[in-house]
Amino acid sequence: MEKKTNKAIVPIIVVTLVILLILGLVAFLLLNIFSGDDVENGIDTDFINMEQVDFFAYHSHFNPNQIVVAIDGEYVQPHPAPQFIDGELYLPASFLRTYVDRYIFWEPDNSRLTISTWQEISRFTPNSNTYTVNWQEHYISTPIRQVGDMAFMPVQMVMERYPVAFEYHEHTGVLTVSFTASQQVIYRVEIEIEENEDGYENNPEIPMRFGAGLNHPILTFLHLGEQVEILYEDGEFYFIQTVDGLMGYAPSDYLIFDDFIAGVAQVEERRPITRPPFGGAINMLWHLVGNHTAAANVDSFYAPRGVNVISPTWLYFDEGLRDGTLVSMANNAYMQWARQNGMQVWPMLSDAFFGGNFSNEVSRLVLMDAEIRDRVISGLMAQIHQFGFDGINVDYEAVRAPEADHFIQFLRELSVPMREAGKVLSVATFVPIPDNMFWNRYEIGHAVDFLTIMAYDEHWETAPTAGPVASFDWVNNAVIDTMREVPAEQIVVGLPTYVRIWTEEFNMETAEWQLLPWGGDNAPEQRHRAVGFAFGRQLLQERGATFHWDYLLRQYTTTHHFTHNNTEMRISVWLEEERSIREKLSVFTQNNIAGVAWWRKGLEPAVMWDWVADVLQ
Image 1 (tube, one colour):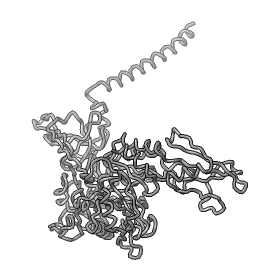
Image 2 (cartoon, rainbow, N blue to C red):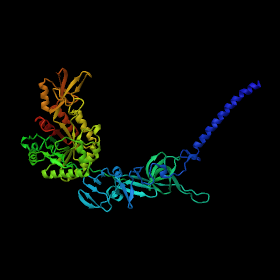
Image 3 (cartoon, rainbow, N blue to C red):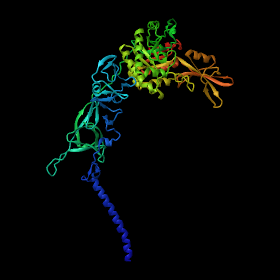
Image 4 (cartoon, rainbow, N blue to C red):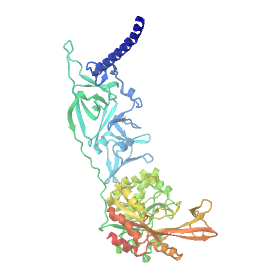
C-alpha cells in the first residue's frame, strides 16, 4: 500500500514544482517590466545601443566626397552635386529647378540659362559677367558656370534672388537649406547635471540617434543648452535638425521649447490678365485662310453678329529656311475690315510649314532651340507692330511629351513682350484626356491670358466608330477638367460649326457595323464628311431620314439605311442646331468662363449668331 501512495504523490509534486517555476518566471518578467532601475523608455538597458556610427557609413548610398543637402526634413545628394569653384559655392540648375524655382530653365545645347517671371526674362551665359533682363544688358560680378552638361549658379546670386538661405558646414559636409516661408520650432537641450563621487559634474550630453529608439546607433551627441529644430514627433522621440545640418532622433524628455520663428508667407504672383477692351464675354471665330489672295479678299467677307474677336490662320513657318522665320498672310485690308466691324484680330500661329499641316517636326524645330524661339518671338512682335494685331492665338497641335517643357518656356518667353505691348496672348489646347496630360495646363495658365479649349472632334476623322463631334458631356467635362488647373476667367470653350456624316457597312463575318476603310474608292459615300450644320440636315432629310432628340448627348441624331452592291450600309449624323447649341452654351453660363470660340467661319448658318447673342449678351 505504501508503494502505491508514494507513486501517487510523485506526479503531484512534479506538477506543483512546474507551476511554481512558471509563477517565478512570470514574477521575474513583471519585476523587470515595471522596475525603473533597469529600464529606460520601455527598453531594457541591456539592449541600449551605445555605438556611434559615422554619417556616411550609415548612409552608404551617399558619396562622402560630395556635398549632402539637408532640405525639407530629408537628405538629398543631387546629381550633379553642389560644388566649390574658385572658392565659391555653386548650386546645379537642376537642383534649383526642383527645389527653389521651377522656372529656372537650362539649355545645354545653347549654353543658356533662363529665369522667367511674368515680368522679366533673365538670361545668363556661363563664364560671362553680363546677362540680360528683358533683352537689356546688365553686369554681374560672379558669373554662372558650366560643368559638363550642367549650369551652376553661385549661391550668393541664388540667395539674392530668392527667399532662401544656404549654409555649408564643412565639418559635417552638409549644406542646409532654409526657406523664409517655413516656420521653425526651436527647442534646446536641457539635461539634469549630477555630481559623481569625486564631486565633479558629469558630461551633460545626450545621444542623437539614426532612428526613433534606443536600439539605434548614435549619430552625434547633443550638449546642454544646444538649440535644435523640431521637425516632427515620433513617439517618445523628436526628429530634429542641428544647426550644422545633422538630422536624427533625440528623447523628448531632454528637449524643452525655446523659440518659434514664424514663416514669411510667399504669395505666388499670377500674370495679370491682359483683357480685350470690350466688356463682357469673348466671342471668337477662327477664320481658315488658304492663301494670300483669299486673306486680302475682304469684299467677300461677312461680319457675323456679336463676334468680337476673329482669328485668321495667317502665321506659319518657312519650310525652306527652317530657322523659325515666319510666313505671314497678314494684310492691312483685313485689319481695316475687322476694325470697321468691331472685331479684334488675334491671328493664329500654327506649328506647320506654310501650306502644310500641323507637324511634330515643326514643333521640335521651333521649340527645342533657344535661338529659334528668339527668332519666332522677334518675328511675331514685328508683325504685331507692323499690322497692329490685338493679340496672338498660338495653336501648336503637334506638341508631344518631349517638347512639352519647351512649349511652356516658349509661352513664358513670349508672354513678357506681349504683356509690355498690351497684346492678348491666347493658346489653343486640347480637351484634357490621359493621353495629353503632358500639356501642363496649370503652367500654360500662368503664362498666357486665355486658354481656348478645342472642345470638338470628340470623334475625329480617323475614329474607330461613328459619333458626335461635340456631345454635351464632352464639352462640359472639357471645361470642368480644365478648371481644375486654370481659373474660369481664363477659359474660352471652343465649339464646332460643323458636323460629320459617317458611312458604315455591315460586316457579315463579324455581324457588326464598321466604318468604311479610310480612302475607300468602292463606296458611294466617303468614310466621313465634315459639313456645315444646315447641309448635314438637308442631306439626310433628302434621303427621307427623320431626327430624334438624344437626351444623353443633348442633340438630334439620325441613321439612314440603304444597300449598295448587295452590302447593307448606313449613314449617321449628330446634328447641331439651336437646341443643341443652347445646351452647349449653358456650359459657358453655368461656369462663368471667359467666353466661347468657333471653328470655323463659313460653315455655320447666319441665324446661329442670333442664338449665340441671346446667351452671351
